[in-house]
Length: 207
Image (cartoon, rainbow, N blue to C red; front, side):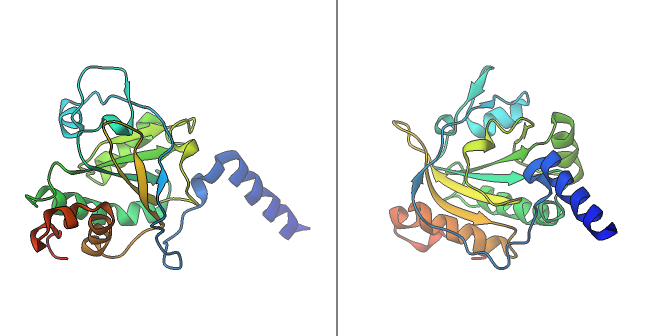
């Protein structure tokens, strides 16, 4: 009876918190390179002038992925309470720094994070604690993340940005990853940026 009660409490907790508690390392899950249209969603234009400049946005209101100034958008779906999201934060910092340190990738690949079920305060605390260098957005009511395909947190999505149409997802990585250079190299390869450049300089540093 006690065991059944414990299971019931755990299940009710998952229902109450939704997918927030389902975090995983991703060790047993492979990335998908199936190409699909990225579901349309809107996020608030960042209040930070640094974040607005990074994304190539101005003014107030909302924006869509297609409005981000760049060729590729990496989206990290995370949760403030997810231990795997916390563990991978330094690796995502390294991914960001590799992009910004590469002349052939800087300005072409941008990163954002969406905190599923998180409040604005939780996202702010996550950004401050783990010194996240790219913009993070709260998605308390799951309006933005609701259309995205993911099994749990963290999940990483990479999409090609098209000025004349919806963004196109080409990479889906459920769970955390172990090597920043390898993760970025997979995205660069799938994006087509390396082929367009036609030489090895498009590879991320350390790949």
